[in-house]
Amino acid sequence: MNTQKRSPWREPMVWMITAIPLLSFFAVGGLIWASNHAGGVDGVSDAVQRTGQIQTANTGPVEQAVQLNLSAVIKFDGKRIEVIPASGEFDRSRDLVLKLHHPVSASEDKALTLKGTVTGWAVETDLPMTHDWVVELMPDDGFWRLDGRWPMAQQATLLKPSLTPSK
Image 1 (cartoon, rainbow, N blue to C red):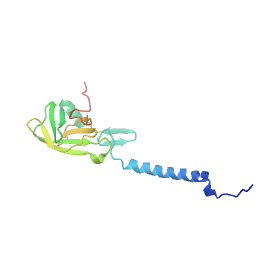
Image 2 (cartoon, rainbow, N blue to C red; image 1 turned 180 degrees about the vertical axis):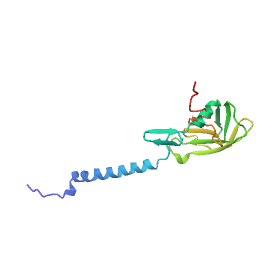
Image 3 (cartoon, one colour; image 1 turned 120 degrees about the horizontal axis):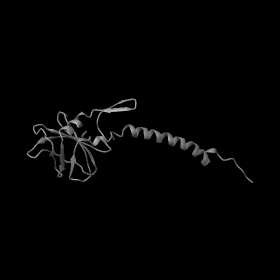
Image 4 (tube, one colour; image 1 turned 90 degrees about the vertical axis):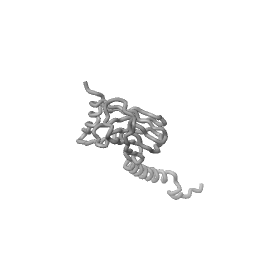
């Protein structure tokens, strides 16, 4: 029997022992990079203060919208976004700010200023409706805020305060 000693680099087990830790090192590095560059994926875009495990946010604008009983319908016809008051007393002399948050990529978020019209407020824009949008509507001074979700390919949606009225 002719038994020549093979080089260790020709053994598959040596390659596995070397390759698995090396690949896991690069995989962990890739995951850390992706998590730091993913953008905002929060369901709420409020500024949140964290102290230990307690998170606090300013709910003042939402509470104002509840007190004023505000709600609005937002619609899009392919070229123009229009906001129509549904309930409550809106200050029709003020411009509105519409913030559209992409559900995954913060780099695709949009902020639009809507000008007053006869029926409400409007702005000309090309808005891709190939995914859902998280929507915030507020006056230019941020006194109140309405929230909602605009499902993909839907022409209109209702915006209302994210809090319920307290009794």
